[in-house]
Structures are given as C-alpha cells and as structure tokens.
Amino acid sequence: MSSPAIPAMCAHRPTHGGRVVPYVSFEHDGLPVFGGLDPGRRARAFENCLCQICELPLERWFYVLVRPQDVSVGYAPEPGLHPPCLMYSEKACPMLSGAAATYSPSGVISRHPAGRPCDDPACSCPMTAPTEESRVRAGRKADDWDAWMLSPAQYELRRDAQEQAMGIQLPSDPKRIRRVRVSPERMRALDMLAALRDLGL
Image (cartoon, rainbow, N blue to C red; front, side, top):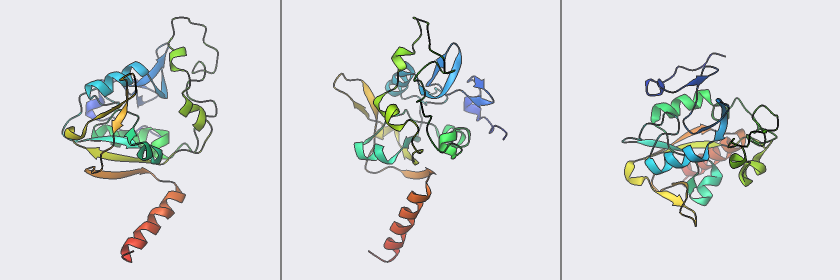
C-alpha cells in the first residue's frame, strides 16, 4: 500500500518509512516509535497550543481525537491537530485508518522499541515506561475514535494535582464531531439511535 500524500504544513517534518514522524512521537536512538508519545513533547504541545503532528500553532479551528472513554472522563489525552494533519493521520495511522485491529500485546514502549532490553542509562525509556492505560489496552481490540472540532476559545487544559496537563477539556458544544474509526458494534448502536430519533423517541 502506498503512503498517503504529505500535507504542505508537514513538509518540514522528518519521515520514516514514507510516513511523517509526528512531533509528539517518542524516539529511541533516532528512530521513531509510532504510537508512543514523548512526555516532554506532549507537555510542550499542550502548554503552547501546538499541533501534535506538525508542531505548528493551532489556528482558527482545530481537532482533538476522542474515544468513548475520553468522553466519560471529560478530556482528550492527546494534543490537538490541524484539519489537514487530522486528514493525513486518518490515512497514515493504522489505528485511525482501521488497518490495525488490536493494540500491541506488549504495549508500545514496554521495552526497547526493537524488542530488546535497553541498557543505555541516558535513554528516556524508563521515563516512557508503560502507563496504566497502556497496560490495560495491550493486546485489546482497537478503540473507536472521533474527532471533535473546537475553536481557540474552547482550548482549556485539564490538569492533575501537580498542575501537569493531562489533556484538553472536552466542551459540551463542539463545532463538529467527525467519525474517524467506528467498529461494527458502535455502528449498529449509532444506527439504532438514528432510527429512534427518526421515530421521535
């Protein structure tokens, strides 16, 4: 399968295997770990309102990627994206495109990305050890994803007790909700809700 066309605003980003390396991606020995977030870059993107793919400032409208469990806690745990960067990610990312059916059985950064133990004391691998969420989802069926379009006025960070950014607060009135990855089970539920609305129930 050929790689999708790279948007102009990502032309300055490095590529690997024909794909843009997102700004927030963790890197080990200069190699990107797609699906792994670098904590420092993630925090910088949150605090400076940067796109997680191209690193440029978010503009008039931007998207946040949202799973059903994110709605329940009220925030999106990843930085926002420009519309062109979202459209590119929908094609390039196996999780968003539907090419990957499950998460990695061992988590993204449970060990050295190549599967070997890392013996470099200066490496940030320990800092990027699997989170509780990554342990829970390891090997699990891939999540459903939506993209919520927000305005700059709706950019509000959710913070933990140490004032560290946990994610972007989800407002009650997004400009638009775009379905990105929808499982057959969720599609049936959405169809049922639509049918009930048509019946006025």
